[in-house]
Image 1 (tube, rainbow, N blue to C red):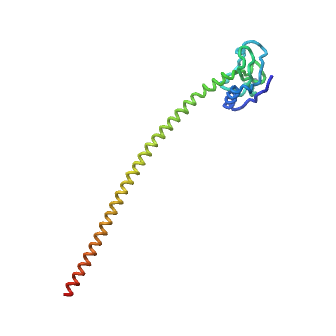
Image 2: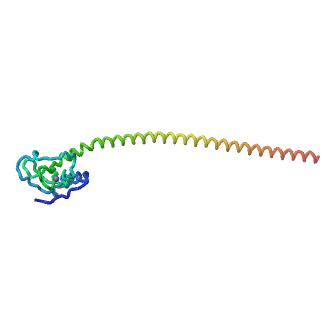
Image 3: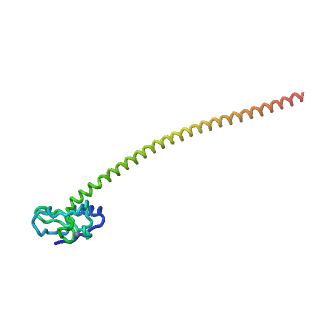
Length: 180
Ligand SMILES: [Zn+2]
C-alpha cells in the first residue's frame, strides 16, 4: 500500500498531473494490488464517461491508482474509492486518449481562428501601406506648395522693391528736372 493522490477537480490539471507523475519516477501513485489475478480489462467500467472521469457515477471523486498485475504492470487507472465492480474503473491512458481526441476539433477550430486573424492582420497591413503612401503623396504636395508659395512671395517682394526703386528714381528725376 502507498499514498493516495488527492483527486483533482480540473481535468486539465489531472492530465498535467498525470504527465508529470509519469515523468518523475520518484513519485508514485497509490499502489493498488488487484485482489484477483485475472485480466483487468474484463472489469473496466467507464460508466459511459468520456475522457478523464473526475467523478464516478455514484458522485464520489475518482482516485488514480497503479496496477500491479502481471497483465498491466505499472499501468495507471481511475477508480471509484468504493472499489466495487459496478462503479467506475477506467485506464488513465485511454481516458487521456479520449480527452485529446475530443480536444482535437477545438484545436482545429482555434487554428482556423488564428488563420483568420492572420489574414485580417495582413489586410490591415495593406491598408496601412496605402495610408502611408497617401500621407507620403500629401506630404510631397505640401512641400511643392510650400516652394511655390516661397517663390511667389519672393517674386511679389521683388516686384514691390522694383516698383519702389522706380518710384524713387522717378521722384529723383522730377527733382533734378525742377532744379534746372
Ligand atoms: Zn462510485
